[in-house]
Length: 118
Image (cartoon, rainbow, N blue to C red; front, side):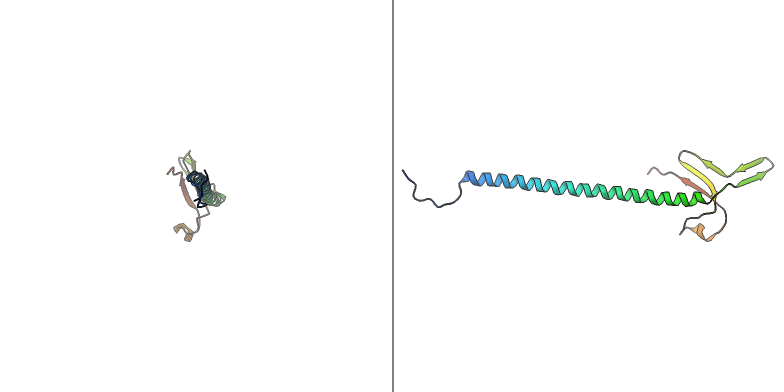
């Protein structure tokens, strides 16, 4: 027996297979975009951290370049104005940070720098 009323369309099985393949392709494309977005986000975070580290390094280098071995002479003995601990440092310097209130005052300045874990 031969079917004569064929409309030339797709069968239900063909539609299900086509939709499944399309869904898989869309999932792969979405995953690729998401991974690219996350990668760019992490790179941006790293770049910001590196920028902050560079700025801190430049400022510390500037201050330490102007470090001066200032010694206070007193009857009790000589005192060198320098100290260093694991989370702080203090020293006398001729350099000041640009834009700070100390910039207008020339001369020796005692700087105390702390490490902030936050």
